[in-house]
Image (cartoon, rainbow, N blue to C red):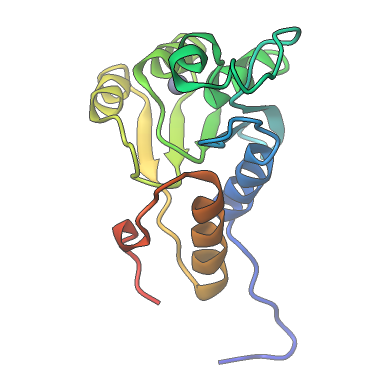
Length: 172
Ligand code: ZN
């Protein structure tokens, strides 16, 4: 099985999700870090984003308190759209959590064709139905292979508080 002349590498989807995971680590949200990237049909990254405040709004502990942050934070998916280059029509958006309804509306309005998300933790079923109704394909990227399984679990452990690893459907 193990050919010394070959190396097992992540699939394109896994590769881009790993970049979304890396992007999440830039978030200063003390509770949940989310990353999103937008990839075009030529496999070029055309947008990246993580959950955070708009530039100029102070990253104080008070502002990151739940009551305040929910109305002020910009989600990773929307930041990826806001920070994208040119048209993102027909692109694929990789996000570490599944999109909320507000982000789903921006995704549809930007003509993104596909959304891949890493975990079904805090999944918003209504958003996924809405995206489907608007012709956007959605899929959970199920980890395959020990390296990828391990990496995505460690990532979720670190970035999504109170995650129950038993929720992961994959077996070692
Ligand atoms: Zn959102």
